[in-house]
Image 1: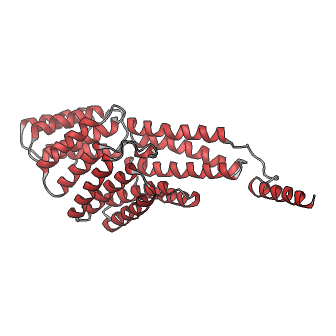
Image 2 (image 1 turned 180 degrees about the vertical axis):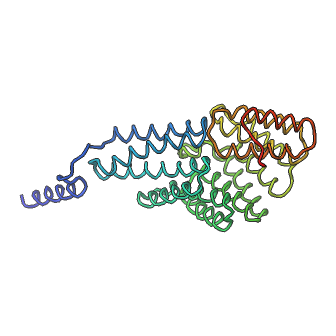
Image 3 (image 1 turned 90 degrees about the vertical axis):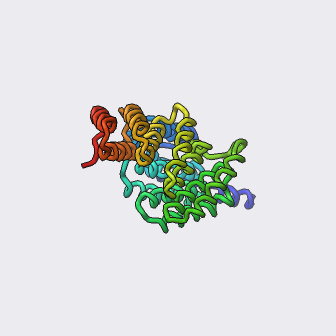
Length: 329
């Protein structure tokens, strides 16, 4: 009888430590978690179709809903962990969205929040994703040491915890960071490793949703970026065309971005006529999208066209102006 009472008392104590009887608020359970997950999944579609600024607004609304549940709800420990994991996932996604929306400081803050959540819940793949995003941000902000360090830390975790798909994405981030740091030989080795892991990822059923974009298209795009970094513009063009051709219909923003990048490389390589055709097509597709990265890339190409003394280049600049793209002064 005493033993039975002891077990009952311990159970009541544990229950109280997780779900205090004095706390009031809406009870949060598995149904709520599933609803939040659905809303988070929808953000990928918004981001790819409409760009970072629109996706940021939607993500912020979802984040506020989840944080309200965290601070004002009543739930058991497993549900609390799920909520914190969702917060981390949202912040990790926001890191990328803020980057696309042209808000680097907010992007870094979101990545830091994602890293904190990853440690709290003990999710190594969430940590990998946050570190990958930090590495990309560091590349854009001209912080090469940080870019390489974040990519290396991500690689160590992925090697122990990730499947082929995750390892392929991490290798691509490492290639980008190494190339930006001037280690083009190291970047080429990382690209080769990304291709090896990509070839093994067909049966990777446990790959997290954020790796869905990864595939041969990303390997080709990263290879093109390596050729550009090493000054081999002519070699980059076929890889950019290949990457663009493989993008599915759901990646509208990326398709416009990749086409603008192709136009930029063509223009720098002296292929003015092709560059003009590609940039006008990109600007037309970008109508209605809210992506600062895409807008910046289009303005860059418009500025390059404006510096070319040719009739077709002048016509290109005028057509871009009618589409809302102005060359930098």
